[in-house]
Image 1 (cartoon, rainbow, N blue to C red):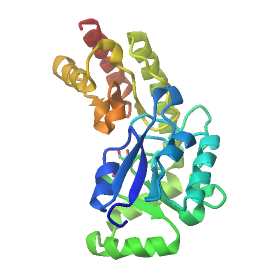
Image 2: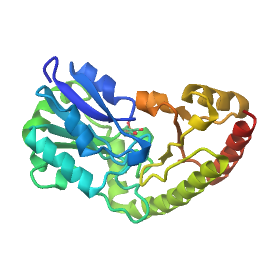
Image 3: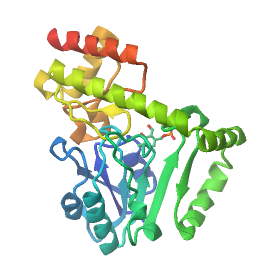
Image 4: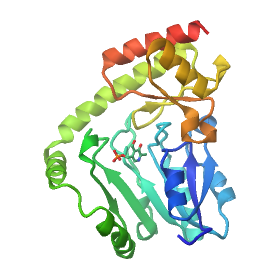
Length: 277
Ligand SMILES: Cc1ncc(COP(=O)(O)O)c(C=O)c1O
């Protein structure tokens, strides 16, 4: 990026996107997504944010913190805009295996004309629950990877060999365990969405990842007040939606990548907390 170049990302989003753009001397341009659109990025909203300075578009489906999944139609519309405006697309697909309700994963990189302008990011932290191994990867056209290597080889050296061996084992033999874990996440998602709605915290059903993003505006609290109050009163940790950008205000990010028994207890505690307000 040259100073002043704009990078568009959809928000609410993973916390590091905006700071990473600033670190690269770019100008971070957030496009808000909404509950009404199931937090997908609508091509028309993207089109309105594109300017002659736009260089890169960052995507993350399924999304942290909303669990949103983009439809083929939306991705095709986004791809069309990327080609029209000659954008590089950075697509963080780290949750691609964790999709529910029979949804299959569609990478924007696979759409016509996109492979040559897409950097696909993935890693082993989510599908294989290998967070501590610190292993991720990027797939991109050779000139982009070569440019990335100029920085990477002097700042990272290389990924730990033990992590690489573990990742190889995950790729060769880990799929059955991953699928069993995904089934269990699916059950946990259904449980947590249904309990939150019962409690009166309106919650859409996310198509992927392991987060739900209930609307807490009916309580009259800000997301920060809700999250801190819940932590102090009931020892339940959730992240205020505002941590994921201004459009996350009024929502709470709940992660269900934990044991069913803990989720049951957390939901009972959230119910007690809301009733006591
Ligand atoms: C969207 C997204 N991208 C990337 C990461 C980074 O994962 P890790 O650093 O564990 O590979 C996360 C972790 O929460 C994430 O939610």
